[in-house]
Length: 595
Image 1 (spheres, helix red, strand yellow):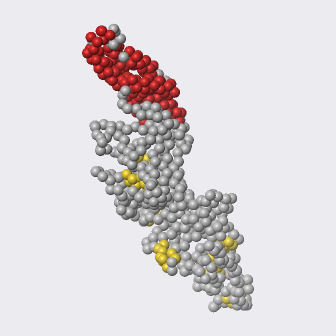
Image 2 (tube, one colour; image 1 turned 180 degrees about the vertical axis):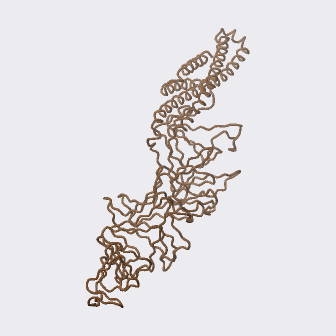
Image 3 (cartoon, helix red, strand yellow; image 1 turned 60 degrees about the vertical axis):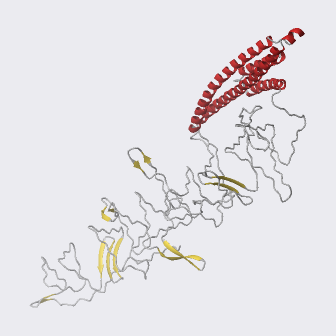
């Protein structure tokens, strides 16, 4: 009895030393645990608690069927609570087939199954993350299935073809590769708060356990002091019944003390782990504070890679139906979203194609500004399209002879460009105009008009608006001799035609109105002037002039003058005029480049 009491006292001392070290590093904590465990083993041997089977080499349990657990002789679980722990440096579960055609299996079933890659320590109370913390699963096929079932699972979706991985659920799948900052800080703060509350409870628990151990150990020492086994034989025989009662009380006290000291050790282990986790959280928070200043500007280096010869993202339900209800769809969101067909050499893959097909396609750089009072969506940013050949069309197609061919222009198809400033430019990198811009339609309008707010119909000329047609040569009304406008109309409050050298109107070269070199010339087979005509300056007639009545202040005759009543000189009829106005300008054809 004295020896056992001394061992309990030594164990108490080791536990108290352990209590002093619960805030030290992991290496010191584990050293204290090993010392306490060594003393616990010695006590177990003396108290003969449970059954311990050990061999320094190997223990083999062999039978066609082996059941381990708190079960009765029939193998059925008995009792209210049971626990089975397998603890070792390496634990292997192997399901071996009986032959080439048979397969082995390992089945794990429980209402809750957890796999955590941490080091649990020698007593299973630690959760130390190591550099090699990992979970590896390898198979010809892998199935992970989650479903909102009650009572039992349906058993479907539990098969996959060779080389396939099936990840299936009738709920939600979250696949994340993220490095949080503010969220992690909140989680660390909450975890730290919970651990501190747990630590406070554990300190009370260990304090109570320590007090219980001291009380029970005092009772044991008192019983040891009452032991009469070592007195003279007569006294021993005389007090045999008292000795037997004393030993029974000592045995009960030993069991109680063992349980209490075991609980004391368990509480200290949990307290030490709690302190270790708090220290780890503190280091994580410091690292987080250092990361916070650069979190938004620098990359977090998180990455998800989906790689395959063929990738398919489809919005369907469990019956394989393509979903068309509100909210169904596929969303991609990020600062940079890229769809490309570049090869390993960073060049475009030959005959590659990116197809976007939908009843409505919207490309928007609107930048929402939402507040409690209003929501605005101002257009911001830019859209850039770079290609050798860019086409926009509203055309119906059809399949003919296994080829997609044009059928017709889409009825009521339209193409609209609307902006405060619109520029169409065919200029090279040096700023020189090159290439061509062409607009071709049955009706072409260039206007500067205000429109109706709702219908967008023409409303009125835009105040202060202007229209400029400018080129080294400007052609209007004709493409060539064969292709000409049937009508060309210029109408305005004011019309001005300005030419620095020559202005000329021609009617197929037969009638000409010419302004050239400061001179004005009018030519035609017949020229008729209507209305009152005034000629300022010197006027010369080089052929016969016929007039009704001529009023003049002075009349000067060089050779003859004749009236019905008098004749002066010899009248010689003037020769018909053969003078002809030569055209300065020739009609030119507009040369266009072929596409």
